Length: 299
Image 1 (cartoon, rainbow, N blue to C red):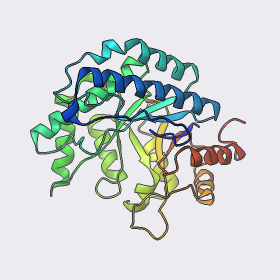
Image 2: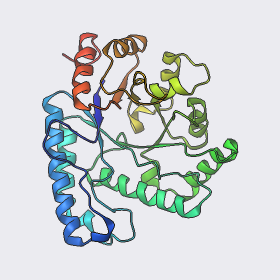
Image 3: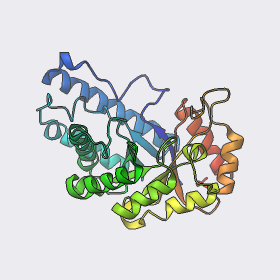
């Protein structure tokens, strides 16, 4: 089991998601910003290895405006060696990497331009993982999208876009996550049947929207969609409800008793856990210590 956190390290004095306004775009500004982002990413990865955090989600903003028409610069060639060095470090330390495009990536949108923009973003993010030389166990995770008043048709539209419009390099990395409002685990399993995509499981979203499946059974159902040789073991997101806040708001810091209970409930199930908890690496370090005490990660 690998445990990690997404995108931002709050201990270090740098960000790998620096960006700038579209109105101030220039190739010089782009190159300078990407250099800073990749240098910070290198520091984050080193921190994570030193602290036993071997699962990390890269920010979507590593390369600002990468999928926007304004960016015609061949940043892939310019930063090829840097990406490869980062990828070698990731592989040498047996880290697991993912990316999670923003909410505007909606493959089943009835709007053709939205779908085209979504595919362009997925191509960009997949190319980052490709440039790093990572195999297809490094994943791109997205949500099912909207229901648009007819979820059955929306699911079919997703599958049609998947099969007819997505490049193979994107399809090899794509997986779908159950969300907290529209697409339950069962809906994602239906998408898996139609496309072969593995299902990323989110325990907190499952608590918000489900079809009555107990937590362990739900984890096992999602895990069954992952082919070990191609996809690796199950990736999942973990969080819990922030006390006295609206339903679905993520907790600020890990509730260790709840995480202990989750690990106990899923004992024997192999998976990598991304903590979607607001204090990032602080909770991830507590989670690793807890998992170690239960024998779920090596001492």
